[in-house]
Amino acid sequence: MNSLSSGLIVKLKEIVGENWVVQGEDLVAGYVLDETPPPIRPQPNLDVVVVKPNSSEEVSKVLKLANEYDTPVFPRGGGTGLVGGCIPTAPGIVLSLERMNRIVIDRDNLIAEAEAGATLRDLLNASDEAGLFFPPHPGDEGAQIGGLIACNAGGSRAIKTGVMRNYVRGLEVILPNGEILKLGGKLLKNNFGLDLMQLIIGSEGILAVITKAWIRLYPKFPATATLVIPFESRTVAVKAVPKILHAGILPLALEYVERIPIERSAERLGLKWPCKIGESFLIVILAEQSNEALYAQCERLLSLCEELNSLEPLLAESREEQENILKIRSEIYSSLKPDMVDILDATVPPASIGVFMDKVEEIAKRYNTYLPSYGHAADGNIHVHIMKEQGWSMEDYDRVRNEIYAAAVELGGTITGEHGIGYVRRKSVGKFLNPMYVRLMKEIKHIFDPKNILNPGKVLP
Ligand SMILES: Cc1cc2nc3c(=O)[nH]c(=O)nc-3n(C[C@H](O)[C@H](O)[C@H](O)COP(=O)(O)OP(=O)(O)OC[C@H]3O[C@@H](n4cnc5c(N)ncnc54)[C@H](O)[C@@H]3O)c2cc1C
Image (cartoon, rainbow, N blue to C red; front, side, top):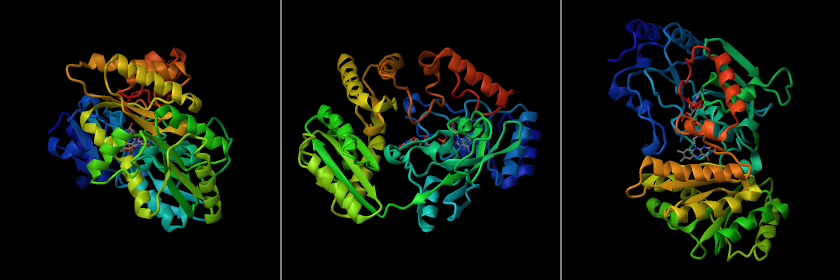
């Protein structure tokens, strides 16, 4: 039993049905965590009730009720977030949209109308079945549409195809007072008023609950190839990135990885990293509309390798080999996680990535620690991992993190290019964001949510 009013619980059951209101510490346990590394993950408050509405009208009624009872509401997607954004940190309602997972594809308009609880996997499958393609691929396919939009997720394909913000054409949202608002729609152009839709994209559940989205799809890329280009050192690998782009090659993904973490990931999966030579690697995925265009890009890239000072490049021969390379890349996070304190996603202007990584290496040396780094090289978005060190306190880890953030910001970058602020980056907001920016954010929050019902304690310092 929990401290929430029994009147509130009765009314919640009337709104969504008895079976969709979950109480009790054991039963809510699966709804109070996310993928944030445990050493920095906030302690969830178990004094919560999980509510699973099945329609926008039900979400609206739940929010009206929460207002009436002054009860916090924590919107939850797939729980794949890395900054504790969906974790309930006070007694209240965890709003899980998992039952709202319908997707309708409008082939003529190349638009998916997706409910917020559909997963990325659902959207990829539905698009594929309709002969279309949803280009972005933020790493975990269990993430939900609502969560992806609330975090403006990015991923490895952003270099060619952009981030969530570039695909959302319309949103249906429920405001904290329970009002239903539709923003945009199946439109490619819309200049009617301030763009509130773009304000809500990336708002991490503090301004409104997203219930439905109209998402732009694209024709499929029928021809794809995966190459691994090995280098003797990081410096040479990173220098190759702009040269690839200057040569007129725009890959679907251009990822930077290093031998130790990539081999650790392969080993954990029972696979072998296919490159025996080199310490640093660029994984290049090419995607084109025809085999001819693909061969031309492949040839251009392979002939460029000498100029890039690379070692012998590897072209994945089979689909299985392609998939294994991507699997090994996408599981690096899970393989490092047991020994990790934090995964950072500081982002710098792409041309500064080499200088940024030099600074990270210098910080690692000074603190006598290992900071494995990999990620979306062409976006200037490298994931630096702070690893557990014997005898270190949380203040020691904070010092290293702050130095990495300061290095990114000095280069014109940001402390987060993908994962957002959530709970764990809140204390950095005051330090690294302009005070006027913070003030405006607080005022906007107050306009949307004067009673601070929605995801309190997140994003704002
Ligand atoms: C292995 C792995 C790889 C990843 N790779 C990437 C990557 O490449 N790029 C990237 O950007 N991220 C990546 N992530 C992070 C994560 O997947 C994204 O942040 C994703 O957008 C979170 O979606 P979710 O549905 O799991 O949201 P949750 O974790 O459930 O919630 C995240 C935030 O969104 C809010 N929210 C959720 N649903 C709604 C809604 N319907 N309305 C309003 N607010 C809502 C929550 O309150 C919370 O603040 C990765 C995570 C993992 C574990």
